[in-house]
Image (cartoon, rainbow, N blue to C red; front, side, top):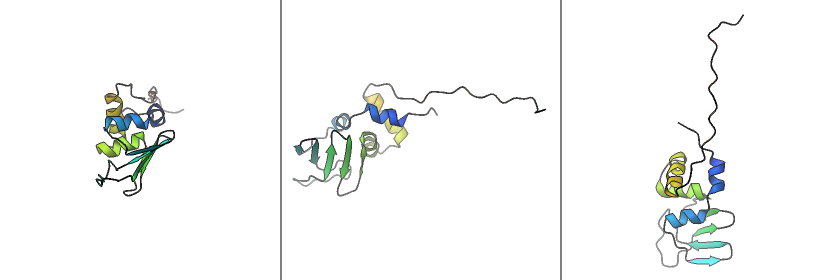
Length: 115
């Protein structure tokens, strides 16, 4: 399986893009932050604002279920995928190239015994 450059993947994504794919609408927006119900544990009360997103820091946190992280963590949790599969899925949905790690040429083992 080919390796993914997770640091590069995180750098290329904005949490707003992930929330848009999720069709998430925050209830309140104040400066660089937004609040609303948690899409992960499904808070449903009318005024729920337990889920916080910081647009500039590109992170989220739920004060009830404790979920938190970056855009990739949010997509992986929401789609219930391992991080590797979540990156592949998310980048394909966004129509972007997956940030693969460079492949290194395999080192050939010598068949000659050491002298």
